[in-house]
Image 1 (cartoon, rainbow, N blue to C red):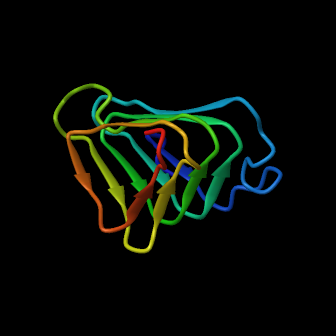
Image 2: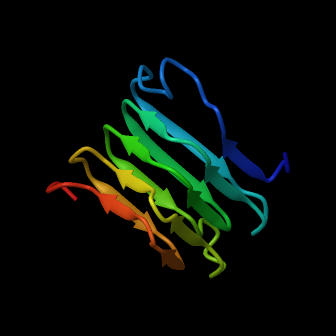
Length: 116
């Protein structure tokens, strides 16, 4: 694994963080050369903050049960892209969703409910 890439692949902590309460923070910051990739279905019981200098990619379903903040261009270099792949869903179970990105590629879907 490239040290500037944070990859969630076969994560197994009480069913993909489903039992972890509170805020989970994922950071991939390396001078405009860092990615965050969610490779499998991932669930978070609480809040999720994601920061990347370059790209955030959701390849399968990403579900949170708390406020969700995703910044795919944290260093404001103009290169950050949020991608939700075909067939993937970013779901916040009716919680607040904040997205900051230079570009959003959305062949998949977002379900954020009425509180967003």
